[in-house]
Image 1 (tube, helix red, strand yellow):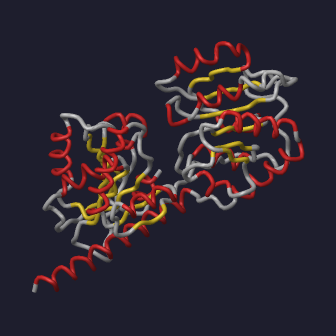
Image 2 (image 1 turned 45 degrees about the horizontal axis):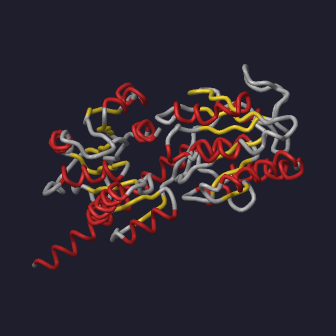
Image 3 (image 1 turned 120 degrees about the vertical axis):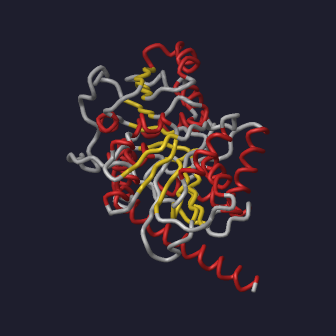
Length: 382
């Protein structure tokens, strides 16, 4: 979305990232966008030196770099060592950058968007903290997807911090009215006579699906028995299916789905049990669909839902999660209020155009910050 939007506004955009990113998002096929494969992974590896060298060559003549993620940001910092000089284009690592004229033209600016919280485990946390410090000391502007990440980057010494604007793709079809109950007949393959409790996400530890399955075991006595449907795939698919086996027909794993809006329209409750989230796109979709929401109070979730558009519980608390789902299923007035509040919250969500304009504004801020810093350095050294 960002690369295409910037290119559509006349910006010369180069996207640098793993080949898998191009396979997933089709950057190379976008008009006005050049894709350069730079292979790197989530964790440090021997190939990082080659990635840094290729990235350094790619950034020749670039005006601004927008790196997405701390790993991408740190690799960019290493590639830019001694190279914050003249340029003409914009580039990004796993994202898109801007190369317009304006404040700071002729100098290379660095914007980094921080998307994720620290991983579990001491070693991962130490590496994360090191990456934070590298990025904080070098970036002209750091954008964060949630307030807790802003606090972390400020503590790491970041000079300028802003809130990232993340927009979910919007449906072009008509939405149900805010207070309408879920559709009587859901997507094919799901029984229409059972309340649908829906969860969507990658089957990975961060998403908290093990907690959700623990909660689901406690509502099997309800009549009619709710059906928990989990859409998505990931590394925990096998273990989660094994955990859910005793629940029998109480849980269905749907795999990857391209009909999430239809699933949301049919759901009595949408549950987001994550240990941490930034500005999750599926939560934005649920708000726009007017679905009653139960979610965890973590990361950027409360900022999206406010106080009224969801029942929020602490991450990892299966009992509280189960109680909240029971409450929504058993109280139609509450469910109706949540649906209405969700649509009200959705009206305040950013559009794709808002996200692109916010990115352009952040690039101007970064360029101006770089100009001021270089001017101060010039005065100090003369």
